[in-house]
Length: 484
Image (tube, rainbow, N blue to C red; front, side):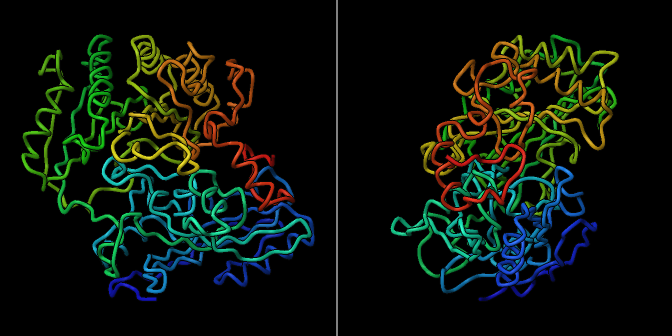
C-alpha cells in the first residue's frame, strides 16, 4: 500500500480499565484471537473503535469482553483494490486530513473529529458534502469484519459491494445497519463511479474554498413571529432545493436553535451556511439563498457575516453547532416543520424554566444522497430534505434530559410523540443516534415498533444478515438488530 507523504502518525489513545478488557490490538489476527477467547468464554463483546466510546465504562454494567481497536488507525491507498484503506480505529479528523493532504480527496463524513470512521460509515454517514456526493456509505467498496459462527469459531471476512461477492449481504448490512454483525477491522473506500488507477480520482474532491455565511437572530429579537418565520423559511428553502440537479447541491446549511443557557445562549437562532466558492455566480446564489431565508423578516433584527475560507479550515463540529457528548434524539424530515411543530420548539426553548442545555439543529439533507433507492444501502432515508437533532449537551441534568424528551414528544405530538416514517412529513430517525425511548410506550405512543424508525423496510434483511453472521448474538447492544 502507498501512503501520503504528509500522513500523520497514528496516535495511541488510552482507554479506561474495564472488566475482561483486552490490550489495544494492532492486527486483524490479534482481533480474531481476542474474539475467539470471548466466544469460548461465552461473553458478549464490546468493540471500541477509538472514537467517542474510548474510555467509556462497559456498556450495561455487564461482564462484556472489551476489544480495543484504537491503535488500528492507518490510512493508506491500496493499489490492489484501487481504493483507500482505513483501519477501524482511525478518527475522522485524521482520515480527512490524510486523504486531503495526500491525494486531494475526502469522504462526505460529519461529526466531531474524535469520532471514529466505523461509527460513521455503519450508520450511513450523512455529512456536509452529502448533497454533492451522497452518504459516506455510498463510497464503501469493501469491509473486513471478524465474525463468529454458531460453533464459536471466529474468522475475518472481507465483504464487498461487487454483485458476485458471496458475502455481499455483510457489506450491505454495514452501510447503515450499525456495527451489529462482527468486529470491523478495516474499510476500503472508492466512489462507485470512479474509473482508472489514479488515486486522486477515486474519491470526491472537496471544494477548494467555501463561502462561509452566518445569519444570527439575537434572543432579544427572537419573538414568536420572527422565530416562526425563520424556521419556516429554512424548511421551505430545503423543500424547493432538494434535488441533486439543483444549483444549490453544493450548499450545506444548519439552523441551530438554542435554549436559554445553551452555548451561544445570547442567540435564539443561528444559520450557518457553507457553499462552494468556485461555482459560477456562487456569491449571487448565496445572496438569493439568504434572501429566501430572511423573506418577511425585519432586517434590523438579524446580523449576517460572510467570509471566504479554505475548505479544510472549517471546524469538525461546525456543521451541527450543538454540544457533543450528551443524549441526542433525531428525525429525518421530508418537508420543513409545520406551524404546530415550530410553535412547540419556540415554547420549549424560550420558556423561562427551560433547561438551558437544550439545542435543536436542522441540517441540510437532499441532493445526491437521495438519488439511490431506499434498498440500495441499509440506510433507508433516501427522500428526506432535512435532518433534525435534539440534544441535551455535555453532562445534562435530569431536568434537561426530561426536557429533551418532552420537547421531542411535543414536536411530534401528531404522530404519537415520534417521527413515524411516512406520516406527517416524517421519515423516521438516524441510525447513528439509537434512542431507547423509541421502544418505551411512555414516549412512543404511535404503536409503531422501534426498528421502523432507523431501518424502515430494510429491517427484515438486516435481521437475516444478523442471523447468518452473528448467530450467537455476541455483537451489538441496546437497540441492536435482532436475528430473524
